[in-house]
Image 1 (cartoon, helix red, strand yellow):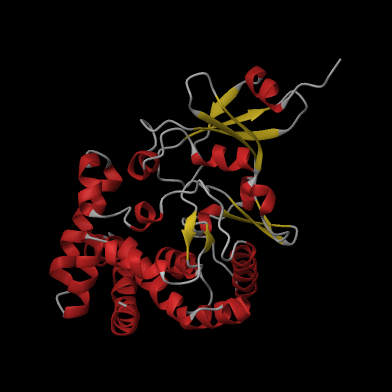
Image 2 (image 1 turned 90 degrees about the vertical axis):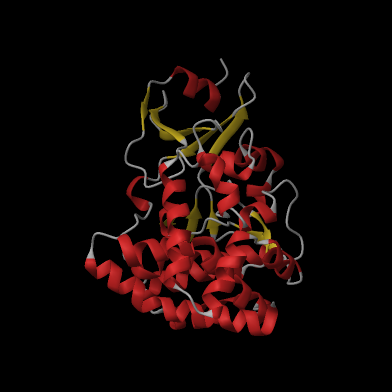
Length: 325
């Protein structure tokens, strides 16, 4: 008798909603114990339940498409994924079965030591080199990823809590950062087309595009990344800008040291102009969150921390405007 496939095992297993995930998109996650004893996470793709899918135009599950097309097989040895199988159900919506990484996945407050920062950057730059000048087809549209938090793109989803925060955050930004650089950042946030055009002129690779500590697990010498649904073709440094704008507060090195590490690990593939644009992209992507934290966060320490880091980000934006835009 042939062994059961993962799909068959999942369909037979009892599943429980996964409630201990730090994800914010609304994706449907379940934990299941298969008949062979393995614990897995089952991710079901449904744009009606998943805000990121709706906002990025993903109608059935890009991660499943990546699995079926073999993109994950092309990852370098020091970058892992958790996917065991994937398919599209009769309704045309994707299902992805992943190893249950458990506590190996970092949380929003998990500290990242300097050694882990180095490890992270070594693996991320390895990913970027593996796809340099040859990103796969079928990834999320670059312009959609870069402009994910454009207010006009978000307004149709204003009933979603996260979208409400983002729209309010950009309103706060307009009053909070009134100098020329701040207003240029806001203008780009409202229309990211010029930034997308500038990025296209730099060397392209496949980036994860949602690079955050909550999408990482450190396992046996490699960095395992989850939630690949926004992976796109772009300069590698756009991943770095996304990571720093969202997670710099949990890195046990400061931003300049982290960027120096990135430069070293990127080696010959390092692109200074791409890095300036990548950092600007990070601010355009989540400047709303920084403004919201400065004004509205209930913890005074967080308000002061984010206020103190804002000038650094504006300096990086100024450099990109002067040199690359």
